[in-house]
Image 1 (cartoon, rainbow, N blue to C red):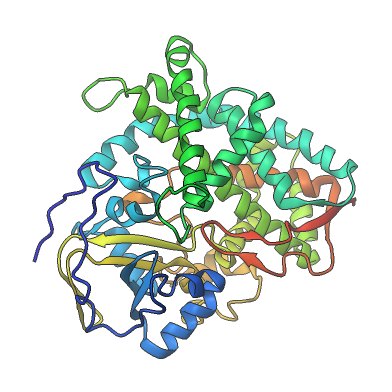
Image 2 (tube, helix red, strand yellow):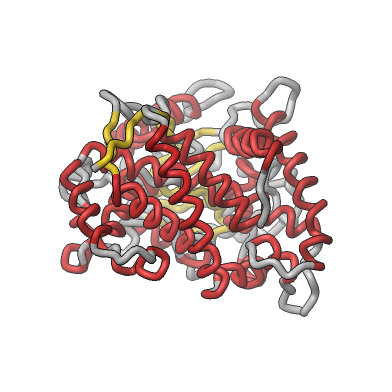
Length: 452
């Protein structure tokens, strides 16, 4: 059976399976109304491990109001992410979570439409704009790290979130947020938290209502700026988008630009916040690696943006942090046609998920997977490993468009942190994390920067 591409830009209609269509697959449906949602959100790793132990790597689940099928492991990652046969819709996979919040973001596009829009957005990641961003990031990070060192103990997650939002506003928007900074930050927080809210309707008092209101505020903010940016020649992300043209030579509409900016600003500053926090936590727990990276940074001659490629061990450490705490722990799709996997027939219309977090912690691919060991990413250690065993940025056509920007920002952050300081965590810092929708430590990761 084939399923026509019926989403057609309508965020309120998605094809659904007959309620019993997945009965033949092993799994469980959980409690009435909420299914397994709460159990999964409480401890996703323990939940996934228990489901695999009981049912195997392909199992039926019931979360966020819909039955779905989880397919775990590097082979499943490759099947879904590469999608060589165009079996899976990202638009319809993310739709149930994001359709009221980011309805026309790049993740909610498929195939030729996605390819065309990604090409348009790619102008902002070409070498010249990236060089501009690097120098802006370098200046902003250097100034802020010095302020952190002077303030004594602080919650790193909150501080890096504010810095990442300020850097995103500088590089992406070409503007200082000023008095609106707190409201903009709250709008993004409300959007992200609403994406996994158990109540999926924007009823008064719900997380979804706050998320939808945050989206409305941000879209209006971006749309007001579009005419000014088209008339100017700025080098920031936003200005590049406003001057971009589609494949037919037509400028993007103000609504399309605002939707892209809303999604990219969220993805950039929230996912970088998460990954930078996990790296700093792991370096704080492993002072030998702090010293090792400090030695690497000390060999630079001071012009950091021009020498980032020399921070090889810093890159290994960042990759290991992304393995241990991937910023997007799972990735959804919807099957457009029936397909077979691991002996099961999975019908068209099925919500399908892969678990980045589970694969990153599987002993099938990683020795002692809970140990922080950046040497896993040396060329020698990486040789022969399944290339879809490490997928923090996704893969295939939907590979994260901003991955090089994220890597650049984190390398610069490490360089400025470890040039003069060492990270000292409070006792028990980062002991527990909220894993969905984007991981963050429950305590904010309290720490101090002490002069080396």
